[in-house]
Image 1: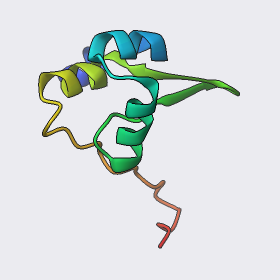
Image 2: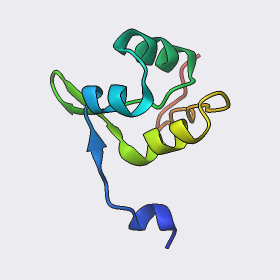
Image 3: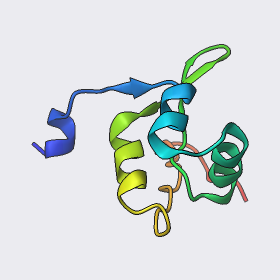
Image 4: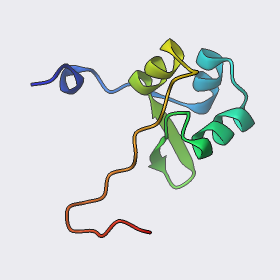
Length: 80
């Protein structure tokens, strides 16, 4: 098993991400669109959160961080 599977899943809300990174809401969303900030996970209809491990990786080296490309299910065609 990889160590990533053994990590507890800790979810941070936006205000916690802002406090941990020092970034504003608008900067977080701008960097997400640019692919230079971790993508959130959907927690509800109008609620998202970020994996704490993803935010820790970002904080370790924000200038070089690149979000992983979203993965398609095996039976889905990638969009062009």
